[in-house]
Length: 53
Image (cartoon, rainbow, N blue to C red; front, side, top):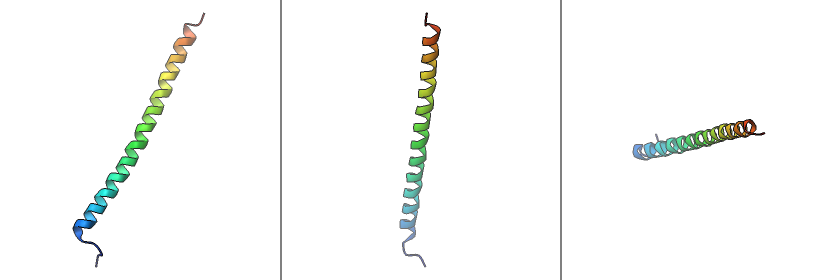
C-alpha cells in the first residue's frame, strides 16, 4: 500500500514540518528586525530634528 514504513513516513513528515517552521520563523525574525530598525531610525531622526537649531 505504502512505499515506505511508518517510521520513515513519520520522520519525513517531521523533517518537512521542521523545515517549514524554520522558514516561517526566519521570515518573522527578519520582519521584526526591519520593523524595529525603521522605528529606531524614525525616533533618531525625530530627536535630531528637535535638537536642530
